[in-house]
Length: 473
Picture 1 (tube, rainbow, N blue to C red):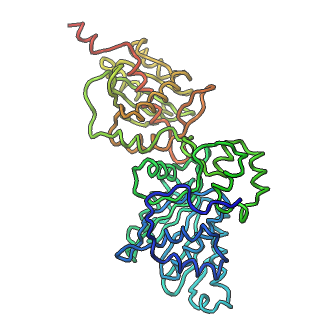
Picture 2: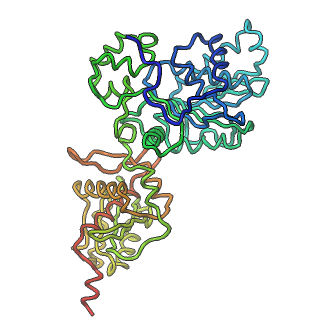
């Protein structure tokens, strides 16, 4: 049985890929060994030229199961680019991956027997986190793991995101502008990775994949991957989705994986299967859909409700408000994120001042919630207009907000704190089947949680201060 050497899916990649791929392949063969039959096609795509002698594919995504040998392609691309004077930033998520790539690419330049390469070498920097190969022709390859401040203030011609399934929006935002002022005026960005798993908090690679597959992006994409989990013990599928099966990939090792891994894990890791929620499973909301709900100003009409979410230690609280009726569109807005370590006076005073207009307030949090409720009741706030956030309410509120974001019935204005919370908050399990919002690695969930509580309160309360005021006249 022979492995499939052509991608199972390809989008926005023209048939005519004339350019420097063949030359790059010859150079890499001389220093890194012969390519496998499928690898030259990726180099052809990366180095294809248009009529202006610029890169034909400015942005390229490659998804292929692990351990098939994509590193050879990366080495070949970096090697050829540096020899032609390009400044290349190679980024990955894990230090050992970066170290290995640096070691393999620096070796031929440091080999004194390779006279031409060694004479071209300017310097090899081996300091961890700052590893780089500098050439006398201006060529540069910098190797680094990703951070939230990656590449700020620096300029490159080529940006390579290896292990792209773990790339976060913040990391991308910190590095992608680095090629906008490319000295060669010929920038290129390459994403290489595998289908993201449930522990990958990065959503960039998934969003790119989904947009291409949905026909909403002109980005070039090359993929080996199954459409379903299917029969993981069907050996013909191993060869269909792993172009290096039987060469780089050992048959017995893959057989062992199929017997020991859960079917969905094997399908993702070995068959290149993209789960519908994989990679964004921990993220509560779609960044793209949240951004699509933005409007310029708040609407008028609808019941006014507030949501208050206290942090676990009670030191701060996020307060949001919502406008909605039982039917029709809804609107949420962050009022403030404020310190609560000194008490709940500021929050209660604001709510009490506006009590004649507020249909309902929903409060959640282990610390601070009871104290706020007591202050509001003591101040004359209607008991029937107060709801305390039980696990069932928190779950229902999160699901309601997500459903409205997905369907586009919810709107919001631009708000950095709320936007950041909405885009980066994770899911946390509540009970057997429910979920709620949870802090992400570089975000807090309280703002979007308070917005969901406000939305839930506006949608579900039976009180309507507008009618009560009309009835009083």
